[in-house]
Image 1 (cartoon, rainbow, N blue to C red):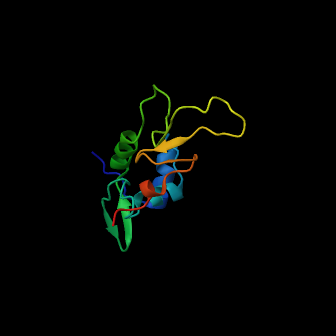
Image 2 (image 1 turned 180 degrees about the vertical axis):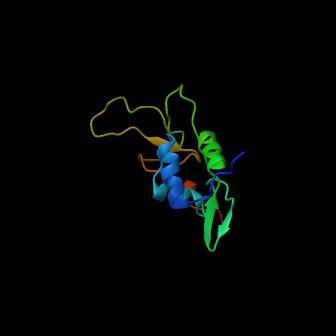
Image 3 (image 1 turned 90 degrees about the horizontal axis):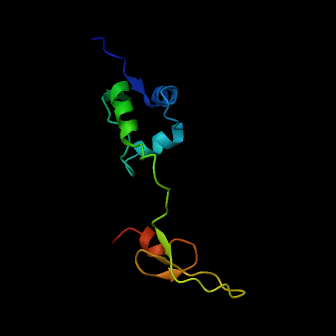
Length: 114
């Protein structure tokens, strides 16, 4: 079995794109950042650069696929009772925490807990 060479993150973007996984450099950098920590597994470090095994990166990309059936939905906000189409009124939305407001996300659901 021949071992594939390790790839830097920049090389990994091209490799994933060539194998049918469209991902940009910025997106991969964001997913690999400590804030998200949702990137492909790091095989090792070359200096201060993480390097990745191509086969494990493809496994990671496949694991991120959504099922092809069913609509994409936003479960963050759900509409409450419609206003009945009265002029000048909008439908009221409610966040997961139960706060009512416009179509913007609730601040309390975005702020980290103290």
